[in-house]
Image (tube, rainbow, N blue to C red; front, side):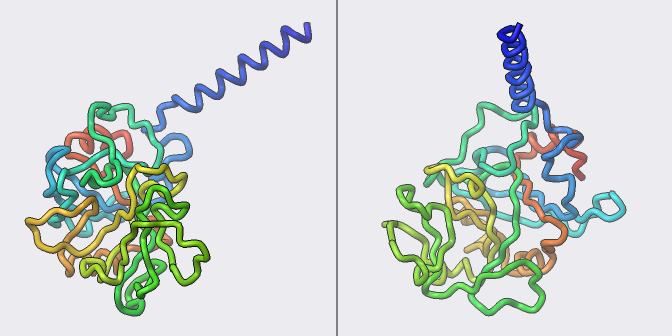
Length: 254
C-alpha cells in the first residue's frame, strides 16, 4: 500500500511538472506572462529573418488599451537579420522552429521579448531620463569573451579583481554608444555563446546594419530613452512581421 501510494504521488508529481513545462503560456492567462504588468512596449518588425532593415513602433497602455505613441520609425538590425534570442521564456505555440537561433558573433539581432530597463551614454545622466543610467567612462566594458565569468555583463574594470577576459567592448570608445539602452537578451541565466552585449543604440547610417544590435537615428533614440519609464515595465518585442501577426491576438498586442 505504501509503495503504491508513493508511486502514485511520484507519477502525479511528474505529470504536474511536465504540465508546467509544456503548458501553453502564449495567451497570458497564467503567470509568468511578461505583458501582464507592462504598460510600455517597443515593437520592432522586419519583413524576413535575414533582413536588416526594420520598422519600430512604440505603444503605451492607458485604461487597458494600447495607444500608439510613435510608429514607422526606421531601424537597422544585425547584418544577417534576426535569430531567436533568450528573453522571456514563453511558448508562443506558433514559433517558427526552423528559424535561426542567435549565437555569439553571428551578426543577428535577437528575436523575442526582452526587458529594456537600463540606459547609458557618454554624458552625465540627462535630466529627462527616467531609467537607471550608466555614464560610460574608460573603465566601463561589456565582456563578450565566452570563457569569462563576466560574459555578457557590463562591468567597471576598476572594481574587478581578476580580469579573466580577452575580449570586450570598451564602450566609451565606440561612438554609436554615445546613447543607448541595454536589451536584456541572455541576461537572466546566461548561456555561454548565445550572444552578448545587445543594445539599442545610435546607427551609423540608415543603410548600414549592426553586428547584432538594433540601431536608429539619434533623434529617435533620444525620444525613446526619454519616454521609457521603469515604473511601466517597458519591453522590447522584436519579431518578423509574420511571427508578430501570429502571436498578436494571443498576447493582446496592438
